[in-house]
Length: 135
Ligand code: NI
Image (cartoon, rainbow, N blue to C red):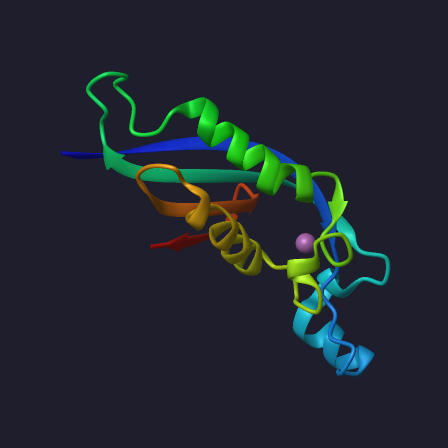
């Protein structure tokens, strides 16, 4: 029987949506306030869901300290209180939307899980806006 477990974490980060190959007018048309010159920040919520068999010895799908360490070392330590446009090499040259962020976090965590499989990554930019990437 497979069970899913979800860990929630919070982080803050700044970003700006801007394509240098577009005119300022087109950037503002497409990205609106997200194209403001000096960027802006969000208080994000991340949800990481792992699915697998429950280990009868521990009662867990994945050891939560292992999961927390992965999330902190490979994701939060790299994006929390950062400027997503300039501080994360994997996002360089990309528009750091929640969609792109969810993909980056998926690609970072999926190959590193010691057990189970990554079921879903959700990145909330606000209560009323989030993106999810599923396996
Ligand atoms: Ni924004």
